[in-house]
Amino acid sequence: MSQLYDETIYALASGQGRAGVAVVRLSGPMSGDIYLSLTKQTDLPPARKAVLHYIRHPKDENQIIDQSLFLWFPAPNSFTGEDVLEIHLHGGLAIQQALFDALDTFDGVRLAERGEFSRRAFEYGKMDLTEAEGLNDLIMAETEAQRLQAFRQMQGGLSQIYENWRHQLIDILAYLEADIDFPDEDLPDGISATQREPVQKLYDQISQHLDEGHRGERIRSGYSIVLLGAPNVGKSSLLNALAKEDVAIVSDIAGTTRDSIEVRLDLAGYPVSIIDTAGLREAGDVIEEEGIRRAREKAEKADLRLVLIAADHDEGQLKEAIDLVRDGDFLCINKSDLGDVTSPLIALVKDVVSLSVVAGDGLQDLLQKIEKKVVYDLSMGDGPSLTRRRHRYAIEATRDALDRFLNNTHSDLILEAEDIRLAARFLGEITGRVDVEEILGKVFSDFCIGK
Ligand SMILES: Nc1nc2c(ncn2[C@@H]2O[C@H](COP(=O)(O)OP(=O)(O)OP(=O)(O)O)[C@@H](O)[C@H]2O)c(=O)[nH]1
Ligand SMILES: [Mg+2]
Image 1: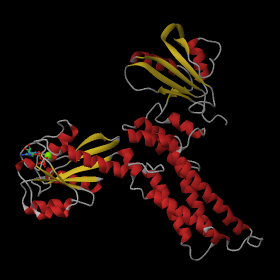
Image 2 (image 1 turned 60 degrees about the vertical axis):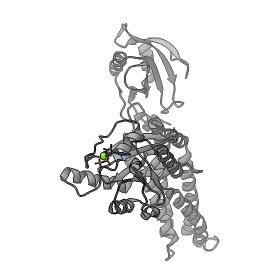
Image 3 (image 1 turned 30 degrees about the horizontal axis):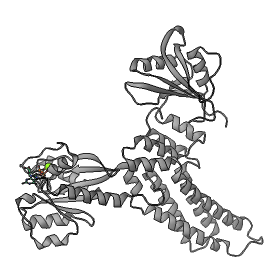
Image 4 (image 1 turned 90 degrees about the vertical axis):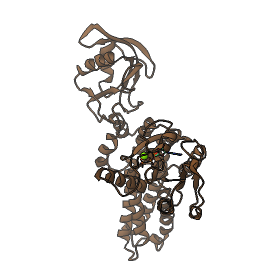
């Protein structure tokens, strides 16, 4: 492939701050010249073999910046597909700065922007968009499930599915177009009718893929569990107990918590956010009112609600709490140290947990129940799941186009073909196999510098 970029970019590829080693990566046409200039060598090193040299300032060879390892990846066999040079220097801040100052003395060399290395890799066909996104997610992964999902996506798990569907659509389109272009030729009758079955099959697969309960998106962003209930029932006490940390203020004054407080946990390898909220009641002032509005908003979006009530509640409080419990949510009766609960209303709720945060009773049971639910809701099925809203929108648009094809009652062949063409195009946008200039900026701006 011909050269797409004139500029050579560089960035710290390893983490910010002090470390034993820092890796600076360069990509672009000047990478080889920079190696020769910094090391005062006359030849490039062998490909992909580490060599040790002093880094000398390009304008003053007596000035030694560091002694470092160099790795040379000539195009096209590099991460970006361009000439790439990696410099493994000592990880001090002043050393990094001195190297950056030296690099800035070269014309056509500059610090990379966010995601610019990955974008070049995409442009040179080294990876498609979902693979690039998978790489980004892998770097961001905090739990085992996130790591597995991201790795699968980086290895092309999602691309394979979408590209397979897209190729099937292109085959179908070819039949339809043959019928449009050569209506009088000796083609089998009712060719568009014969394409209904494969389109229906694809439609079903796509619908199933969309209908996986946002599993992939939730693994990526975290499963949200909201603690909900009247003031003083012990929501903040429970948050602190689950987090094993004193994150929220606890007091016997009703209305202590006003803002939502979020704690991230790793449960069985899945990322979980536990969100404590303001107690629900008639607000005393505008700040509390806003807190309660936020509590309801979080509860609306929650994957799981833990609706709390104290063991010494009255019937009215119990009814209000039960109203907040959706299918799959838990009713948690806290302060079991204060007595037993006997109301027959409790039998209306499927999942009830009795606990005392103060005495430490029932916490383990609750945690196990939560873990079981999270694993059930998020455990990976056979195939990879879509992981971003960007994917979801494009796949919904694909399904809608197929839906129009299947319901096209006036049998206009040209319109039918157009629906299939659109469906294939939407799928191509996900992997970046069709012209997607307008979405590239958005995709890569989510990356950090050095990737
Ligand atoms: N006896 C008893 N008291 C508890 C228990 N859990 C919490 N409390 C007490 O109940 C009071 C209220 O606890 P919080 O955790 O602040 O309650 P909250 O639901 O967050 O209250 P708001 O923030 O006002 O909505 C505090 O005095 C806690 O010590 C428990 O299991 N048993
Ligand atoms: Mg509270």
